[in-house]
Image 1 (cartoon, rainbow, N blue to C red):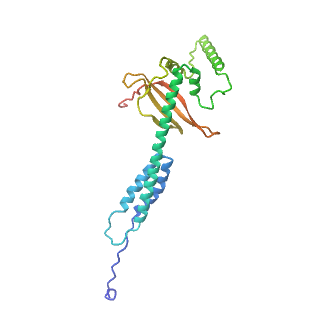
Image 2 (cartoon, one colour; image 1 turned 90 degrees about the horizontal axis):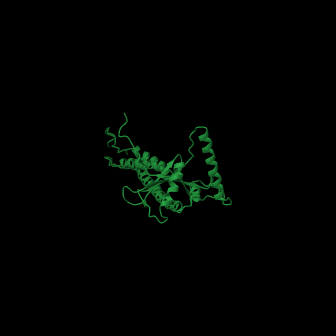
Image 3 (cartoon, one colour; image 1 turned 30 degrees about the horizontal axis):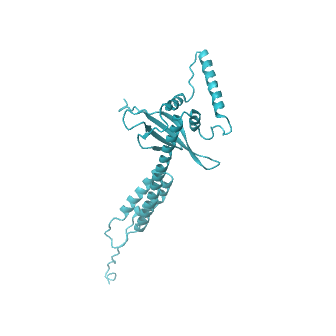
Length: 249
């Protein structure tokens, strides 16, 4: 009757929520959180966009895009939780392994096994074969370095063997007993450096501020052929606080 009288029927169109489809797209991108933890930002953005899409509407019809928003929120929470949980579990596992290996390294060094301590400071591709006599090999290496130092002194040049500070630090550990109770000075720091998985372990002789502290940086390596993994000590030096300027003029 209304159309016959010249009036159009009142139509309640469903509003379109573009933010719901954006939330769904962001939630799919948040799947990369499993391989890169910074991608968790997509999961957070997806949840925020989804909640914005589910806001109340004055229309009596269900807004278009709310279903996509609900699916996006669910997927984002799933991927975000999975990625963050996997990252936290990996950090905890690698941190425990790195701390254990660092303590075992200190036991080897403090027991006077300087040769084996040096082998632990090499990656598996640079270590000597088990069939080689380590004592004779390292003695020849020591004689070679001494010859290079004498030749440098004759030429009036300075010669510092690579890793000399590391060697001195490891050698000085002999003065500590093998069963020395090294304490963890601060939580193990797991980080990536140019795609290489590393860990920083700082151990101290006791809990006092004046205690002797060691900063041990280890690298996590995976054998390409065997598929097994291992840690090796990259550096072992006394812990020094970094001096950072408050401002740069």
